[in-house]
Length: 104
Image 1 (tube, rainbow, N blue to C red):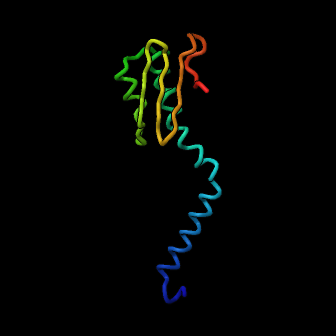
Image 2: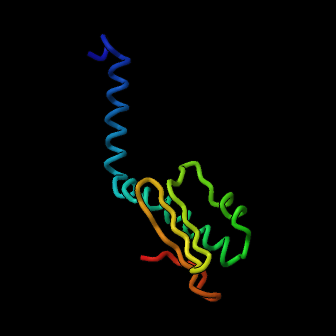
Image 3: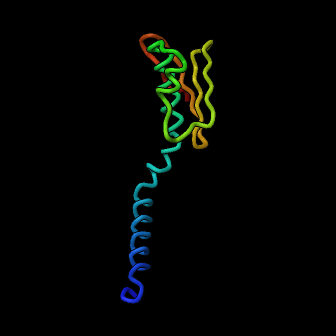
C-alpha cells in the first residue's frame, strides 16, 4: 500500500501522530477554555482596580486572539465577569494588600 499510495500513507501516519498527541495532552486541552475567561477577568480587574487605569486602556490590555463572548465590569462592587469558549469567570478586587482574585 505504501508504494502504491505514498501520499495517503503519510497522511495516515500524521493523523495517528496527531491523535496520540491529543490523547497525551487531553488534560491540558480540557483546561484551556477556562484559562481564557479567567485570564481576561483577573488581568482586567488588576489593570482597572489595582493600577487605576481607565476602562478603555484595560479593555485593550486584555484583548486576545481568542474572543470573549461576554464582558461585564461592575465598578460599584469592583468586580469583573468575563466569558469565553463557553466558560464564565469572575474576579473581584479584595483590597489594597490582596489585589484581585478569582471568585469561586
